[in-house]
Image (cartoon, rainbow, N blue to C red; front, side, top):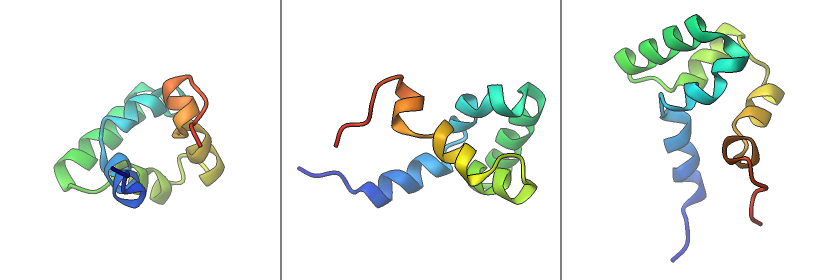
Length: 76
């Protein structure tokens, strides 16, 4: 069995739960507002964060990396 990495990436990007990991960088109120809008509109939270310029692409990459989200290095 092999993972469909593109599908997994889309699923993670669309998850409002991902905002939890970004909370320290965004601040509680901003993170909650983004999660709520994502939930109500069905839009990916990461898209909303990008559109609003809340975090740079580099910050998003770092904060949403497997190592950052799990505290463990990514498997190759």
